[in-house]
Length: 92
Image (cartoon, rainbow, N blue to C red; front, top):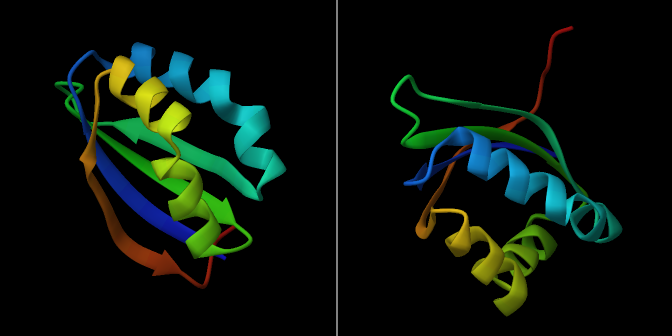
């Protein structure tokens, strides 16, 4: 299943990418993979398409103390994480 999420950031997109790269292996081990991410022009919000085996597992992973700290250290406002929509059909 896929979901489109947004989150507010305060340290820019490059810092978010660095953090995301650092936790990729742990995320993939629990069935969560970033398919795509991009930011708004002023780099205060990231939009993310996640591919996940289980939405509850993804939420649990994102709220894990070590993962939440890594996100916060990168300027992520963890509490602002918002599910915009689940995604069913994709193209291409």
